Amino acid sequence: MTEDSGTGVPPTQLPRNTAVSPVAAAVAEIAGLLGTVEKETVGQGNYSYKAFSVDTIYEAVRPMLAERGVAVFPRPPTVEYVEHTNSEGKVSTTARYNGSWMLVHGESGDEVLIGFEASSRDNGDKAPIMAGQQAFKYAIVQMLQLSAGDPEAENRPEDALDSEAVAAQEAEDQRRLENAARSHLYPLMAGEKITEADRDKVIAAATRLYGPDEDEPGEQPKLTGPPAEKEDTDA
Image (tube, rainbow, N blue to C red; front, side, top):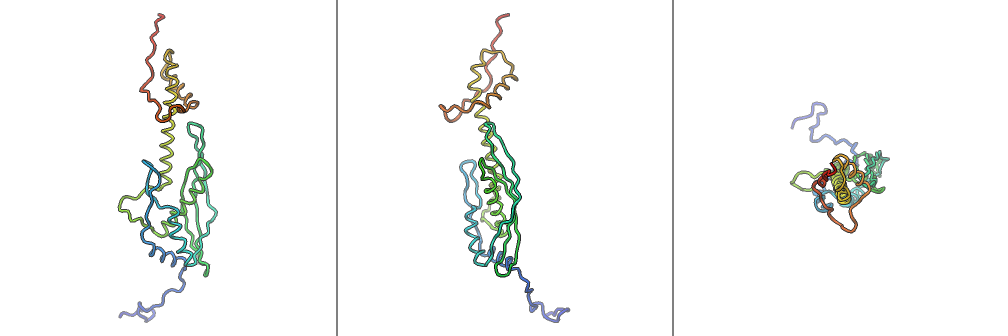
């Protein structure tokens, strides 16, 4: 066996470094034990997708960290807020959450810092809470290199998909409002001489006032174009 020129001791007999991080050792052990964590279907219809559930991650990881004496402490996050107002004047808020968490080994005091960033949108006050959950979830997913065992292409993060769903819904709401305004106003303008540009201005203004007919739920009537101009017979 070849000897080490510095110590005279075979490499296989060299002592291991005693300054081992208990947190790193616990994380490595948990990562080796967890294996595949199944994703769950979230949402409905065209807005459904598969993602790691927050509760699934918590239930899988929390007892394993506790068993190895590792506690998780959140640190004060940085949160940015962006407000959005839709065509009906309703306000929603997007919270961009940049968070970090300290993993601490209770016996030795060893510490490891992890972090992640996520965003979420809500019509109430839950945006930062949802974004914080997503950030911590994906910090754990990345730290433990969790696999869903899915051979298909990686799914988009649900916060990004949620933003797309919100945008699509707002576009649909806007279209319905415009159709509702047309259904009310076109008959009123049928006998008036009005340019197409002015007609569009009237529709845009009315869209902010009219909503879908309550008596007729569902799809609003689609009009393919404005009524024909009335001919001037006074000349």
